[in-house]
Image (cartoon, rainbow, N blue to C red; front, side):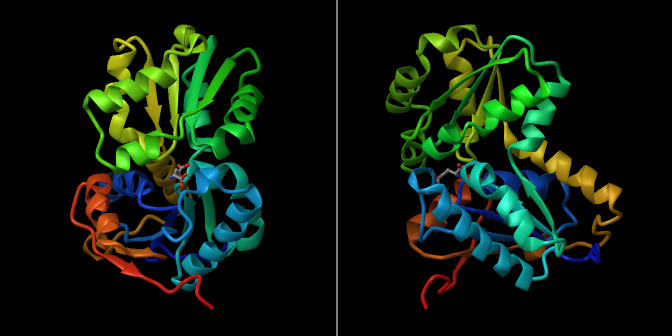
Length: 272
Ligand code: DGL
């Protein structure tokens, strides 16, 4: 791979939820410039066919390559589950391709994951069986209980966080008897870190709750270090955020996910 440290980090998601991952990258790797693409035109990916998600992911990878990114980081669990292999083949060594599932599974299994682990995510992520297959590939004795929790995405985007409505929805999904024995819960969706604390409280802080942001940023840092591709300069004030459909609402909620002001630039990406 002929990459240079000064190239930006390319990150994409179905929308603005992946900004939780971008935020962790910004915090851990302040010298890196981030180019973020949110496919708000097609959001949500969680209800789309894997064939469509693979097609969108390939096209977005082309955009990040045009922007000379050294990575194509799939900051969406749904796309990580269905499109990682295809994007890797498509990118064909022109950038490093990362997803948000593998670093979390590796982290979990390195810490020792015997017993039962819970996973929640979109329908697309849960129905793919990716977490189950990858965790059991590392650790065959681990039991995995997974559940699609699709209402969490619109709930979070509408700002129902830390209130009675979100408490009721969390309770309705996670009161499932299968979750009573879990020691760890993976938040398999990049929106969910915003309700992490509420989920911890639902389990009376007995369950370790893992989300991908910091784990993925740490893995990215490890890989960049190993490949001698850490940016020595200061690209932190020049992040670029693109979307395939713009509304003021997207821009407003982006701030919540990225924890600072975000200016979204609309590209006529899917219009031919
Ligand atoms: N960000 C997506 C994920 O992590 C969830 C939102 C969607 O369904 O598009 O799976």
